[in-house]
Image (tube, rainbow, N blue to C red; front, side, top):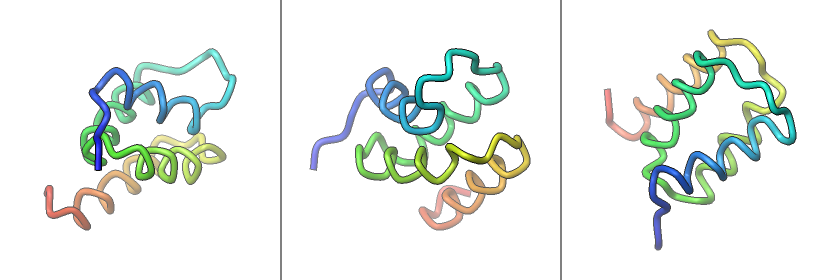
Length: 76
């Protein structure tokens, strides 16, 4: 299975998490970077997480999802 580099992973995740929205706050951008890292650059994981978070525009929900992802992957 091929993983994406950080730049490619960010591009894929953001396209699914934000669609065509051009305004992304620094807080969401920072969390996006952490999510991409926690997903290990795996395209399907990035698409699923982006799709899950696309309707959730609340930082606390994103932080909670990241914590759960890290716990599941043993990264905490």
